[in-house]
Length: 288
Image (cartoon, rainbow, N blue to C red; front, top):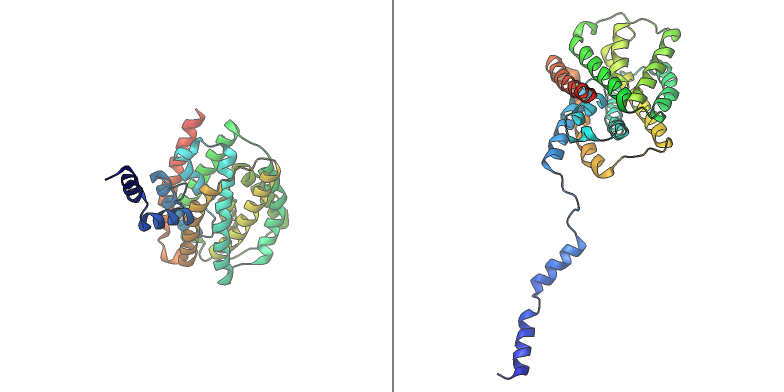
């Protein structure tokens, strides 16, 4: 075989096959994802789904639970503003779904929600605008987690049949403002404070309290998130929020549809208390 024939033979052997060309075309048109969820992210998403299911069953958005979960993972090392903004973002999803279902079932009382929400909006905005970090934030978040654990642990069904009392404006306005401010500073929606208040003061039935809390949480989270954005500190990561948001979206639908009737409340409380107390213990260790 002469040299020219050998060159032609080698060129023919190196020519890409039609299958190889089609394979390359698929890679160009449908590139593989740049980021694949790791084992920890998958476990976090599953935990967030469970938390969203449990919280939404009683009309809550779940921010304290999300902060608890994130505080037990490598995300605990993220900046405080990062934790708050992502908790608020997840809150918006779940609280909206919870309110939709409770309102659709006829449990929402607009006049009761109105007074608390109007008082809380400017304070939640201010709390989100403030840059409270470091030791102060750790203490406030730890106290919030412990309070949430205590209220969940001591909650009972004794409020199922109550004689509802009129809500005095002189008490509702400062309560709404205070809860709004604390929610904006800590990074929650305020439902863990508002619901016990409504029940302990005999201002609402559990279902009505859940409906009001859901709307209250959504408005507070939106106001605090807006204030945080306008402060110049916007650190929401869409790559992180997308899978976590999908998880809580599913959990929110399931939990709010099931409601408190089909889920044993004692089991829910025990589970949430354990998670919140573990997170609180970790925050204490970080403080000291």
